[in-house]
Image (cartoon, rainbow, N blue to C red; front, side, top):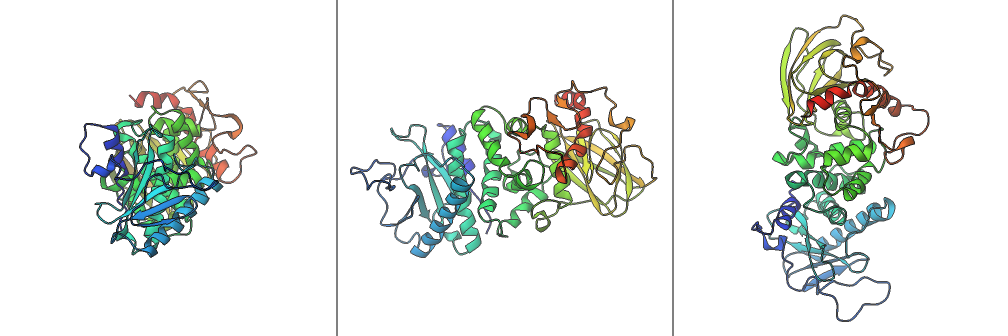
Length: 455
């Protein structure tokens, strides 16, 4: 089963009244849906917001309904159980705001077999909900795969939550990538032991050099690995993705790049570079079960050419310890075990590790990378302890603490203090938190180069 959610098309259709939707149901509610009941239901219970079809099943928070032949009771029961599990994890345990209308009514789930996708979530408007209330469509032809069917339900439920937090017209054409990356990771949060979604990592790995906002080749779903790193990578901590969405709700006109920076207190180049190093070296959550990107080998005497889109990353593997020189006219960062830096320099890549090069300029970056036998020199090297050596190579721009970052931490100067709002450790750094200070030190000292390269 391959995840194919039409929610981005729903966002486009809802945000462009003159845009002809591929399916009228993307913007128009089927008959009987979205009608206030004539007679109120029993107290402390949720009723239908409208009239269910011939077949229906209700739980505490959801109303599943389908026409004859579109679904079975067994399919509906499995979807209902998955949806309630998602409610318990996301709303009750993690504290996400519930979808609009779900405080009073059952959340509508329509089981259908005639859509050209695995499912989607859209919004309809009524006098009672002029800004819209969500309705989820699940394609029952996908119900044969148990793991896929349950994670699909969780994925679409998270979309219903997203509609309550951020307007679908906020970020323009680049808005939907983070909706899909977040809903896919949310399904993993609901079922942390599932392997049903591991295949989706390939949609990042095979196109890792694409711009971070790309929706080509299902890249947006594959970007769930970035959200997984935010929540579990040891940098920012559990609930980071949720804080990103809360910040996005408070700044509806901001791009996701800006929202991510402001909600984490770290510049996007630091976020993506450190993520790339972790993904390439399988150092967080279950990344060792995910697909690897293509990794050309760094062989002494070999020069390789590479390029990426904005915040895309290329990966290189060192079979033996080598020194590398990277040359580019564009903005990029180099990251790997114990090293994250900006710009041209020479770095040592330990044997058996992966180096990532990330394009930090809005137009991406292109470069050449040359490997040579390790000489043991200390220019640009990073000690195995994770500490960045205080060499002249770390600060060739003259930028110090007035550069917009707190030197030595990589944090924005306007970031919350003592880790508030960004999940940063508030006590003495150890383990992954110590590595954060080390890996971001060079970026902190080169802020002026980032300003020049983002034009």
